[in-house]
Amino acid sequence: MQQYRTYIFDLDGTLLDTLDDLAAAVNYALRTYGMSERSRDEVRRFVGNGVRMLMARAVPDGEQNPLFETVFDTFCQYYLNHSLDMTQPYDGIPEMLAALKQRGCRLAVVSNKFCAATRELCRHFFPDTIEVAVGEHEAEGIRKKPAPDTVNEALSLLGVDRRHAVYVGDSDVDLQTASNAGLPCISVLWGFRDKDFLLAHGATTFITSPKALY
Image 1 (spheres, rainbow, N blue to C red):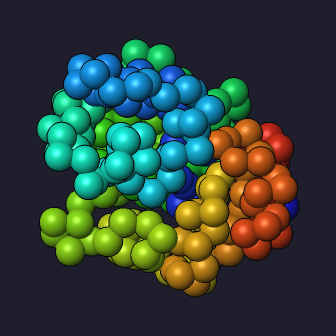
Image 2 (cartoon, rainbow, N blue to C red; image 1 turned 60 degrees about the vertical axis):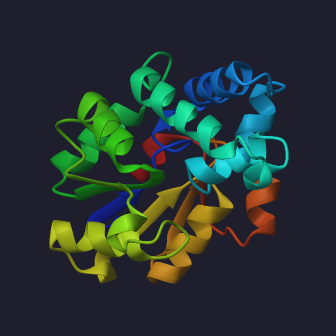
Image 3 (cartoon, rainbow, N blue to C red; image 1 turned 180 degrees about the vertical axis):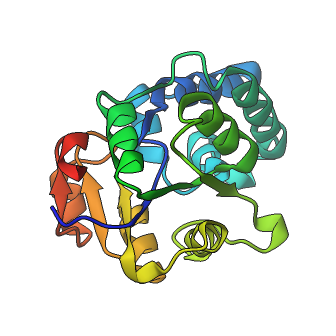
């Protein structure tokens, strides 16, 4: 595996297994307003394009549902208060980040999760390794993935050259993001999408263990 100077990581499905907390928040919001709950596998398929799209896929009739905004707000509040209930790093992730950091690499996270949750999770789990965490904040003109904006912001905050950077993620959105940002992409196979799905979306480089990065 080629060694890079800068690693830009996706968060959900790449560094952290957040699925159970996301599913719990989705179902709390749906249940609160008398809507049918979603299975863990359904929520797995719904994630990747930000929490608003997650809920648009989970709520019957999506954003056309007259209760959508209320359900979405309930989800957001619940998730902000419960994002650490069951979430944990995948096996080997803290050791991999520490090894890259020790090698002198620069490390950042970009996520379609809202900015406050992205920063809180990185502060909690990776306080000594992840230097920059960029979440969704389109209100400030930073478009969410697969637009390259969050990657560009992370590179700018790190003060590094993209020529020596790589993007690491688990989804088709990550592949598109890396391409739009002009970065090579490493696809992990422990996340929310399987190899056949990733191959169908243009993935060419895969790893099955965090150790492969160092």
